[in-house]
Image (cartoon, rainbow, N blue to C red; front, side, top):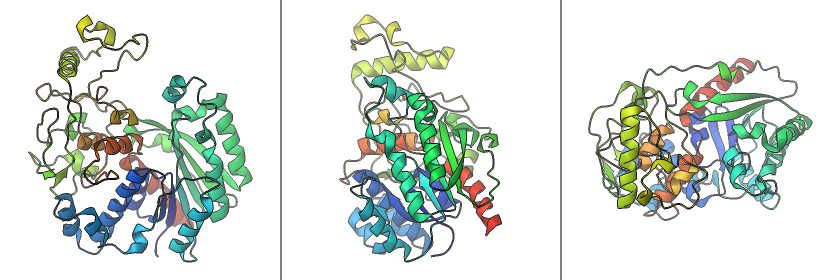
Length: 421
């Protein structure tokens, strides 16, 4: 192995990892409990490997459906695929995870640990929906296992990503305890409130990024809150080159773009030259939902007004709970500098992510959601079964760290390590 090596904990679909790979870091292991996400990670491992050996065209064959997932994986060294470890992080499984990581390392050292535990236990929405404010949720304490990985592998740096609600969870108790624990394990840390739209992502996504460094190492940690990547583009730059489709329609296993790329898609690595468009799949909607969508889009496009559920005609109201979540139907703002936040609830329905083109009258597709999160178009989101991936794909996308945001953070850290090495 060459380069600076890292372990990705709670890896999800690999958005954080994608940014670090793009910046020049070398993954040793991706640890993730969700089986579908692990298939996504393996497929991305295959993409990176085939590209590195000059066989990217073979990966494109997979995107076209000309070879199966099994056939794709057979083209990749087993050790690379084994870097994806499908186990839950916790006392019962950590020994097995360590054993798998040791096989990958072969005696070499880890430079960096990245990742963040599932955020539902810290998120403001998650706590609001839970009867006890998520107080008994074991996910509140997964940072303890993160600290154990720091203690075992002694990386120079770590990156801990989570939702902004982490600062207020338990009246600040969780973050305070986390700081004390990381310090006890030999790490100083700085906490940053980062907004994805300041790092080139066309989405309003506020996150806590904790950068930790080993005691004794004098790193001048850059202030991530000062990073400003100006794009000069609006959200419609993400949608304009995609074929127009209707609710319940898909463009086949793959399709071609309807127009050439634009500056944003190129600069953000979304369109990367493959010219193959996949997962442009729109979920079906009822006649009633489509009527509501038209009302919401007309209101937004004409007045930049948001639809309140209680303003709908009575015949279109089917929810008994009318006291909360009035904005359950929301249009993606095409002419704004960034959209509202993409979250995992998009896997359940698309009401909060209505496409701004009234002629298409639908919620956004898998690929459109992935673009809002800044994933490259050749990033393929898997299900456990090859043919059933819409729901797991949306879930993975909603839970992900935007790769473009991760990339800009990774570049700052790469510069730090280079200066010290």
